Image (cartoon, rainbow, N blue to C red):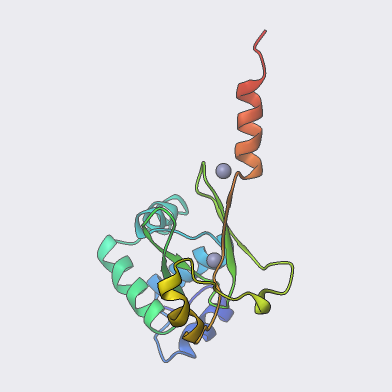
Length: 157
Ligand SMILES: [Zn+2]
Ligand SMILES: [Zn+2]
């Protein structure tokens, strides 16, 4: 069975994969929410949408989708493996309270950033590295958590 959305079917078939129901459900969830789920979170989110998958099917397809570059696998700041539907270079804004993760670009000339050795004995090595891309992780408190904090701090009558 093909995806409800023609666009997703095309995206999957362009990678020479069959647009199976499971692959459609996973990509649809990721494209619509832009969340950076762990497999467990994805399982729960799919169940909530009324489009559940078994854990085995989910793992199998996450493997296939990341192998073909349709999604990216990365290890989040909490040490859990997560999946990202945004496969272009980007950075993450991470809430240190609830873990919300937002894709961001950066202001300023990132291309001019260079790594600098922190230990004298590594100066030569660091200078000799061929640096490819830069991945930044901004940590802070999201607006929803700020609001919750403000609520807690407000004296109760
Ligand atoms: Zn938060
Ligand atoms: Zn991302």
